[in-house]
Image 1: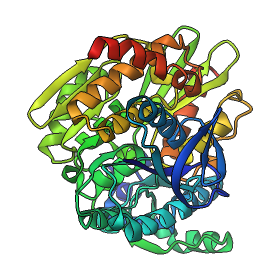
Image 2: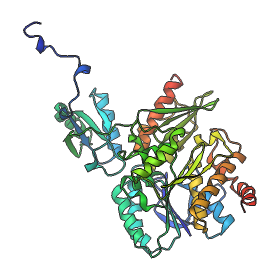
Image 3: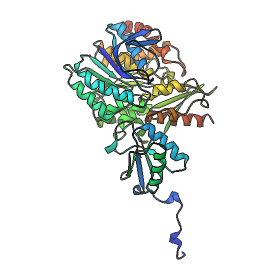
Image 4: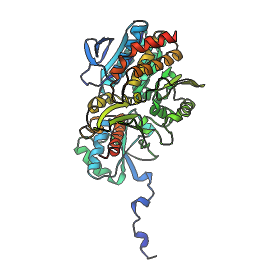
Length: 287
Length: 183
């Protein structure tokens, strides 16, 4: 089963641990309703679509309200430290959370106590904390965009905000940035780099490039990286190997984006609506 | 050369900056740094937000670099503003500098500006913020919620309502978008 860990941009949202249920354009978690929008809710909604289509087990969530002050994230780190060791999720996806090295390390120690180690996927703030703490190799998959990849490649930067200027974060430099990230041990076992071309790589090099369909507007749409991470997480939780899940997830995300016929002002909700159709078209092709 | 010509001060820009002349202010969180920066800049202090040295890094953090000679004055101002710094430390090694490069993509009607990991997209016809993407700190979805749908003029500065380095990066993208849209 998949568990997603993240935050909700509402300080009044209490810490919740439970299954996410879809209700129209909202998610319902332990009786708390939250609108699907960019961020962790988009990730959960996309994961939920795949879970429903592949092997319906549900998506478990650990969520807390945080608008950046970090109080919610702090509670979440402590909760995870105390509760994760007793769980048996097959896959954990870590997402928007205030990066905190100490909090991250406490959670990682708790994960090491789980009888069967889950597949660990990190995106957004949690990926920053994982890299900053020097524990990136403990993770199975990171899903950075090009700006975040430059940060992984910069062995001195504690946050993408400090990525040094000579580390050029342009699409054409992605293969070099991937190599540099692995050279400094700042990458997970696999990297799925989101961009005009999606790259799947490991320490040995680039495994796959996913280029079609190419919808340039997706880069500007907040949440399209979240949907990709969510779908890959759900595919891994369904039993697929990371390589297969990442390639299929990237193709699904692109196709759902294409079917939504977006412009740079489109909401990610419009793209999530097309995941079932993308699944239908791709799985006929895929299997 | 006149006898006392060596007493003439050189223009500021030609004096090499000595790390020892500088210190940095450490605060409890990024929100306090952002508030302190605003107060000190408004009072004309030549300060810069920078990355802390590794020994005091906790995660998503910033420090304020300042001229050590102004330490007492700055401490009093910030204490009066109820954000006293936790520590005042002399700079020994160069501090990390915030990103100052932008990537710009023109989609025709829309313009996207990226600063570090944050992207802000503006509809060039009406200057409405069409989307905010990227980032990983928890104020990013909140900032997107507050900014998207507003014009560059109407929208609050991300720095005024954000609390993290991603919020700070979004401010840089926001300023660059304004500059490119001639606002």
